[in-house]
Picture 1: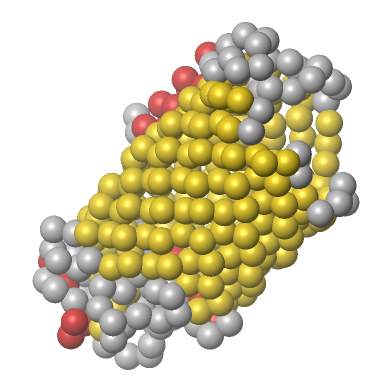
Picture 2: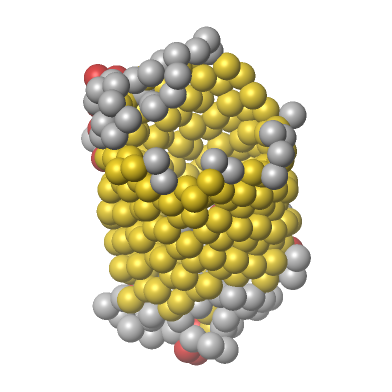
Length: 299
């Protein structure tokens, strides 16, 4: 049994909860337009292969909270979305995510510690990249504590998987195991801190470490030991055989910083920046800088 299934089954025996006032179950619907810039969208290991791009996302989230008490909370989310990539249009995609979050606070005191379990699955369909069609999942468990009215922190662990649904995708190479490029598993710890200077403003910082499979796209002439990896031609980046995508094993360090600002009861803005630094035993190291801005609209 893989780790995601184990965590899912163990959640049946986990208390759920949150730090909220007792209330009836609630239902809400949000629309979230988002703009995202990446300076290395293909995670290329060499400067000649790097491609920067802008993605515009439109997502709608249906949220149902059947349990909402002083110590316990359960939340279900369904989020259909569309991502439009501006230059590398073949990377545009649509899909839907389904998630459940369970929280439990150990005691009624303001600073009592809490535990949170989050499970999420996402189906993905790309504009024109059969290699990437499929689904992904994440299981995340974290422990946290509010130290004072303005500062809280949490420590956790996450496991991610991704699978492709096409066993003979366009771009296959003889002996390259192209159907395995997006058959990926990775996991690692994370640490997050939240600072709330006012009731409408939250500043957050997070460090994440992930170890495992990553898909990296680059020019075959600049990729070290490329023939040793599961690989395929990547027509989403360039026609022909020069650009290929490889599944490599990498250690990823991700540093994130963001701001969430409530504008009105119906509108809130979130801006964030993150830097990914990755190292591999094969020498195909890479970096990626990401900026995003999202407007959440409560309907």
